[in-house]
Image (cartoon, rainbow over all chains, first blue to last red):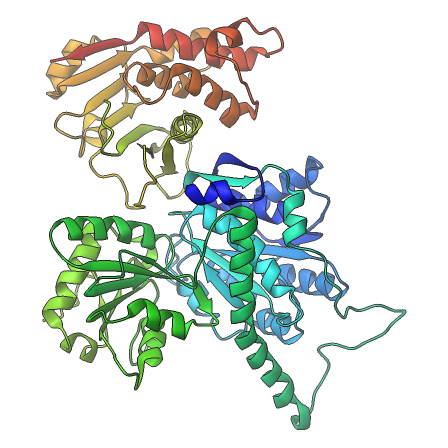
Length: 405
Length: 205
């Protein structure tokens, strides 16, 4: 809380769930157009935004559409003519948007979307895991994963800052746990006067569709130029890293809260590090406290920035730790390592000067809780298996019928 | 119930429509108004009127570093007397407190369920008198305010106004009961809160 004192903006402490934190951030970002289709557990976001627009708290256009496919199409159009736009979704809704995800990023439109993460059908399951988010990892959207309602609020503001930067011009997703966060009320600080957000987030000129100054975007491109245009996206995604770090600095200056691509807790002197993402990072910290009191030199890492993947931050946070345990919340079926984040982590360490013993665990699928006891059990299992763990691929924690001896 | 070292964990039991989820949010809001850290979350799943509902609140002096479900609550609050004890007694700590909406005496309930700390209030009667509807959540919070040293009755009154009616009130409960600008629906809730606070029977074995 010391950092609050340095902040330039006066802030108020409010109790919100992460869905409402998203809505307040979109309001404070002064979005012009919102289009969304309701889906559990995201619905609270757009319900709150509808309320704000109806109350006159937010001067924006709410477009009621018949599907997520149309929701994203509508804001792509609105963004193409220069509006600041926003949508929110979960699970099947995100999958239904899939082809438009690529169109939005290919057209270099700075959309921002929140995703209250949820398992995928079938079988139908409304509860939390990160299968929906991980399925869209190759769609060229900058992706931040938050762990608290406070971070959700700040990340939405940050996402607009990064997406609209002329060096980037790519859309962003801010993800957080469905239910475990979307429906959990907790205190957070928001600016008392939202004009501070317009200072952080000035409107910047960019190429837009305008009948008086006609341009074309997203048209047919032959093999002689398509690759070069897509390569610009590769470079923009790389450039986004630097812009995100600049945005982190600005968020710290104006709002007093410091964020890093890889967050850490008790990591400096740790022999064992556990890395996860989303709300589970909170529980992991509490598990670290418990294991530390039992004499284990263990620390926690959180993957906050998923795209672009922060390779150097990861390496410097891991340092000399001997064991790195990655706990994923999604399954990449048939992959050599079925944990999506674990795959990235292993790739990051390939042929590095020092590489810890890495193991991959998958937990909390389809809303199954991940408790402190689970993290303790995972650490115990990883230490017992050592180098053998990764030879087994990913270890599916707590699932009936799987055995890893 | 004061313990600066740890988190207080409360579990609310009711039926869909009685306001158990809202009660969990009001309590978290009241704690936040006291400058404390808090969390409120429902048992996630399909919502159906009349079906058993669970909701949870955590209160702490420090940032709460867990999102795991509450399995061993310090306090269980039961909004509906028709729920079977096996549903709400599950996992209650050995020295935990049971707060029950009932017309029965606290001592007889303590003996019946073999639990050491019991508080009883006829929240249904209070709600019917003050709200003309069996919405008992705010009355149950009035009972709870009797034992929660960390959260005052005034804060719960303010949080009730904020959470249900989106009204910001700076004064205390006494000034609220006198206020002429406040409508009947709001006043009814505050009267129920106040009445439950006074009428709650406390039994400690």
